[in-house]
Image (tube, rainbow, N blue to C red; front, side):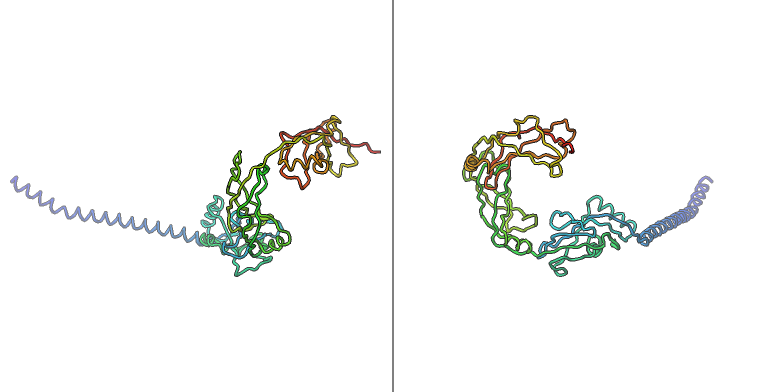
Length: 377
């Protein structure tokens, strides 16, 4: 009997197994259906958010700075940029001019937010390039919105400029022309009185704006070469490297070479005591006749000063000091109040144009003066 009972139980269990399997499959199917529903809802929600963002084309005011420039290979150069206010834009690095504008952009909320973040963080720098096929030398009036909408970065951002302030800018364009022989000269610094500089080569070819070329043909000038790291002791025939300036009279130029060799020859420095020199006072024109200049000590109206420079230049001062050098002080309206106070003023030296590389030795001499208002008659 026991064996029969065990066999019956086993059979019952075997019959029950298909029922439990069916129940598990139903549970799994229910879970899958629920997961599918959640996934569908999530996808639809995401699509709704995207659709809502894309459907919201907003207009937003953004203040920004962009650079208007010509392409590197362009024969044109931008000389100046003026907005409606008439103010000249400051020069931007890398060529071109920077322009400050307020722009109303159209785009989705997320795109406009990204644009603001990129501009504020400096990740996005905007450039507008002028093509020589579209513009000619002279003054051109250009739409700011057209310049910005041609920018690839803004197109990639998915935004469009629809309104700008100023609406237009005036751009003055010139054309690059070549000058075959422009003389080079070392830029004067506090170091240059110690040596004579010879630039090799003494002349180079330079591309300049056409308007500048006309000016230089009437009045030739030298293009400056800047020296750095000059040793304290200069041996004879010292060769150093100089950097050719890319500015000529404040205007941009393109020299054919950026570096040149410079040969330095030391100049023997000499000292000379000048004086006694009468001190001249320069008083503001509107105070002449209404104020009197008073000195704390009448003896301070003359001064002796020691100078240093090349021997030949100092000899000029020895033979004609009164014509070649003047000692002077500059007085301003601040020296008139309070009237009981004497003010310390530095004494300066003026040299005639034919005296070069001479300068005072040591700290500047000073005198004490004041302006006293004259009594009205």
